[in-house]
Amino acid sequence: MPELPEVETVCRGLQSKIIGDTISDAKVLRDDSIAYPSVREFSRSIRGHQFRRVHRRGKYILIDLDNGAGLAVHLRMSGRLMIVDKKAPPERFLRVRIGLSSGRDLRFEDMRVFGRIWYVPPGHTFAEIIPTLAELGIEPLEDLDGAHLGRVLKGKKQAIKSALLDQRVLAGVGNIYADEALFRSGIHPLRSAGALKPKELQALASAVREVLENAIRARGTTLRDYRDSDGVNGNYQHSSWVYGREGEPCKTCGREIERTKIGGRSSHFCTACQLLPKKRRT
Image (cartoon, one colour):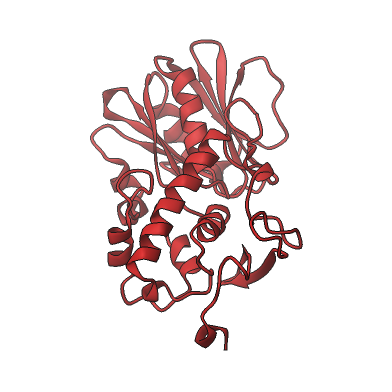
């Protein structure tokens, strides 16, 4: 699933291309790609709106339209938002086509059909239409520090890797960058979240921000489906420290990178650089 860096990259690409453009028409080719309102209402309501701003909340792409309306998109597993010439032939997994007055299309492609689009009518907020937005945790690129992590993780006995994937703790962080941040901070993914010391929490907060910023500069990670709004792959996978490197030597100590499952998700780590306390090992 695209995580914060991938979604941020798409947002920045759209921001540079569609602001000031107007929606001329819309065609929905897969009904369940529209989460709200009905397909007929969606196609009718978005016509004539002008794009004002593209921003992000967690893994949600939020697009402000004129007159107080909006569009929200969650890419989920395989969704893509592409800007293409209107005459370009449709891709096999095209689900929604939004025609623009500039002669281009904003196209939503989604092979696995988990992605969703919402239209937010004038007079409503994104959170009113998508209640889960109000439940998201702090944006890690803004005010994240060790003290905040200490407050939200206090008393949690679950593995720190699982806690980082909880969107109520940190908005936008997923499997790839949780592994990378835990390695950079020297914390084993099975450590109890509520048992981390203040120094470790500060190191983790700094690592989360550093990893996310590096990934944004690399335009995200492409493992299978992700492309930015120009159809270009991300490059972070070529410089990852542990994610996707099972059996390869650690870039710091040379020991073999290991992989295990924590909470049903693959976790990559180095047993030398990320020590697990003896009690927890037992």
